Amino acid sequence: MTRTQQQRLRRQRHRRQSLFLTAWCSLVLGLVFLVFSLTSGRYPGEGGGGDTKVETAGAAVEAPAVSLREAERFGGLSLSLGLGGDVAFGTSHTAAFQAAGQGSPWEGIKTFLAEYDLTAVSLESPLCRGGSPHPDQASVRLRGDISSAAPMAAAGIDALCLANDHVMDYGARGLEETMNLLRGEKLAVCGAGSDRRAAAQPLVLKSPGGARVALLSYSDVEPRSYAAGEGTPGVNALPSLGELSAAVSAAAGEAPYVVVMVHWGEAGGREITSRQREIAYVCARAGADLVVGCHPHFMQGVEMVEGTPVIYSLGDLLYPQRDGFVGGLLAGCRFEDGYLARLELFAVRCGANGASLLQGEEARKALEELAAVSPGVELRISAGGDSASLELR
Image (cartoon, rainbow, N blue to C red; front, side, top):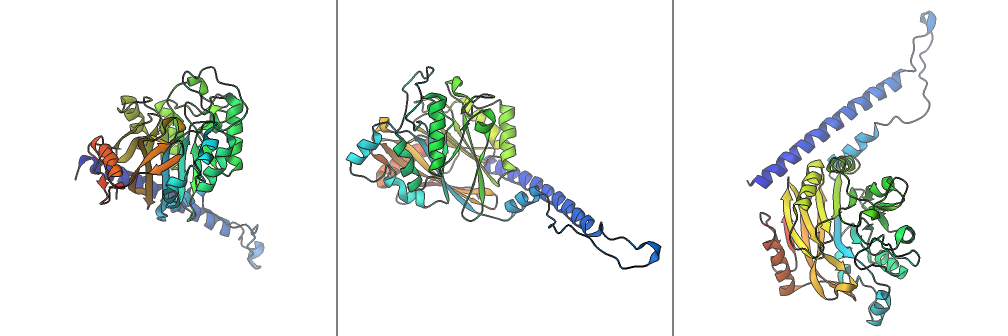
């Protein structure tokens, strides 16, 4: 047994023990409360006679809410989650796409999206008509047409992570317009909000089968002025490592599965930084089932950190500025019995006319490159070369 497997087993054992103790205590408290409720209205008649009467308010007696969350963990509910990297739209993207004669920029990956209960991607460009260019954006400013929202929803995208270095490119007004548009299309959002507290809220998604996953979105890159404040809108900037640990632990108490997506590292960088590893370690120790990165614009390797898989960069999924670029990943996650059981990775081509899955030898080559920068992780490339899997249970 490898050291990584031992770490994962220790982490699982500790987690199960903690959950068992919490569930057991909650059950005992619930039984005590039930007995008290049933007996509190029964008194011997004064003077030694008379019938005994039980009075109730007619309300059902329920165990504390925490026991319901723990029962869900132990109930073995399964869930599948598809994840994609950075998505951005240009104002001319829709017209160019329609001119190409395709119905949606998501056509090339619709088979992937259909395979999962839930899907989430990182949206970098605001989708707005209003707002003013933010003066602190040192690189290119991104803005997509509002018509880009509906095809995302129609394709099966469920959630968008907004904590990044571009979604505020057109200021607070642009962000507000973007969030209202997305919510109007029934697209859930996380990682940005009207103030710091709202931006930091985890997004709890529920599968058709009833299983839940908490999604947290953080930005660890410039501009720092994009961060939400006490009374100002913005993105969820990565807090201190202690606060990060507490937030991940709290999310683990709200849902049986926890995924943390972080905008981190160096733009255009292929090397994993010490800062990325430091953040990943904190998330893993705090109870994250999976840590996923974006921002470098290239795929980066996979590592096991304290028994938790970390994908350091999914690269770009849909980015008009990087037409034809091959270097992105889609991740398929299968959760079972309270843990991430299987992780599957697919290589994608990022194009102005949409994202598409690589196949055959082209896919195999890309995934072999990924495996080469993922030391200590056994990525098994399929016979056809179309995917690479990591068995975790």
